[in-house]
Length: 162
Image 1 (cartoon, rainbow, N blue to C red):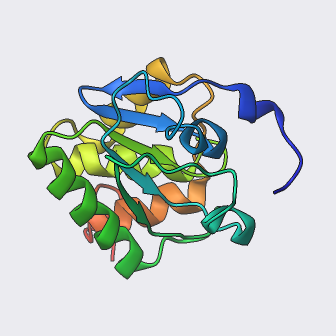
Image 2 (cartoon, one colour; image 1 turned 180 degrees about the horizontal axis):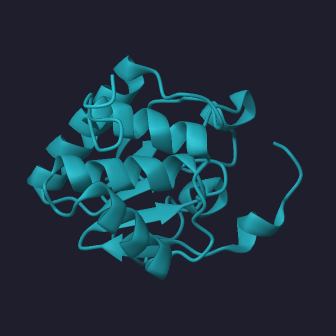
């Protein structure tokens, strides 16, 4: 695993009812300590060392999905919709869902924002601002945000400018 970074100390954030965001480190400890009662985890990180590291202790009663995509690049369409499907299924099931990437700053924030829009919880821009109030380190890369907007057809990427 790579060296620890400042964001490894950022705690998990509850960003909405049953929706949580964190970085890899907090997610890796769920098997030993799960104070938020997380019952489903979506991992969108890509670092090969984090796919199944020896210190990533999966909790036995938690449903896991790993749908990786790169930070700073467009989200592949298949990965995006797989994330939406997993989150939709788990959220409807009543799970407390954790979305995490490496730092809990860009990819996980974008996917959570997208899901809140997709599930008609909030409009995309409102969801992003709402998440930022609950996770001050949230700072999604513009390429990731724009690709999510395009896939969701959210203005200004709703097709009206094409």
